[in-house]
Image (cartoon, rainbow, N blue to C red; front, side):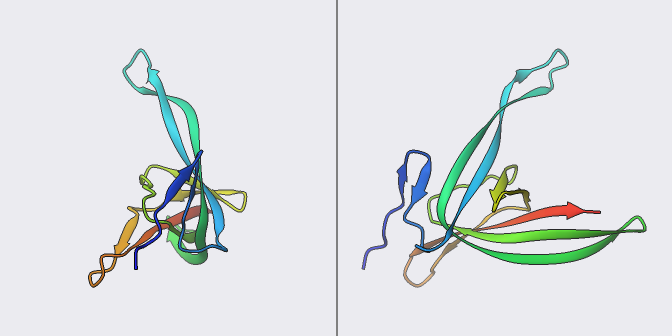
Length: 126
């Protein structure tokens, strides 16, 4: 049985493993050039909506220099063929999160079927 191919329609990627999943918008900051000191100047942000993602919560709490911080996070499973750099952010349900670490790609060692990529997101409060 052949796996369904991921197809790009405009900027929206379809063919996700979760037909009732959510649309997550990945945000990549562009670079408009360099300033007089050679530092990068932020450019326009590119938005890439990805349909059919599975989203579930994760939460942890941390002590940092005597104050309580709460890390609110999500795990997003995106369809195969979507690359998400660790420097990106993502908008889920109207809230912007940072990508936390490197995304992990899943491929079956038995069949070679590409299932998709797991992306961990976080938002720190406190």
